Image (spheres, rainbow, N blue to C red):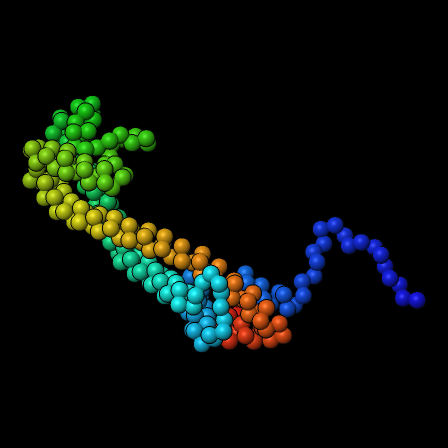
Length: 242
């Protein structure tokens, strides 16, 4: 007589998942990354457009196709804005570095003009828009908008009125860099806003796309219980895992 063991499975042991169920797991079939997800959505929208019998009560093929198009456009806009922002952000950092170097020399000018008296020099530095640092010493604010304000309202007038205004790190040095800095900062702020808007639109569309694609996967399995794997591939779900 065959031995029919009644020993229960050990606690915590997982129940084997049938191969067919594993293959149709939407979490494996639906890409997580934006690019592949956009491609699968496009293919599914095309296949759905040819299969007029296929219906979801809460989402039409036309609405899904538009959603897929909007998602692809949001991805492209985000990438374009981010790409445009990169060289401008790099130039801003270069100008920040030049400001820091300029301040090193400017403080020497102020110290010289103050008779090399440290107390007198330190007392004058806030009038040039400099603030005390936690690590010691004085510098322009790390916040770029505050830095811009300090340059315009304090440093420029103070340098222009100082006896060293025409020296190498006097008015001309700060003025030329300020104009470029102000222009770049306004552009990068606009691009940052554009990127943020694109990300928000993309994320909203992404959640809805995944919701619809999951429904499509289950609906195809329900309608093609024996051949659903082939149907999934035909509809654009080309990989078993992303």
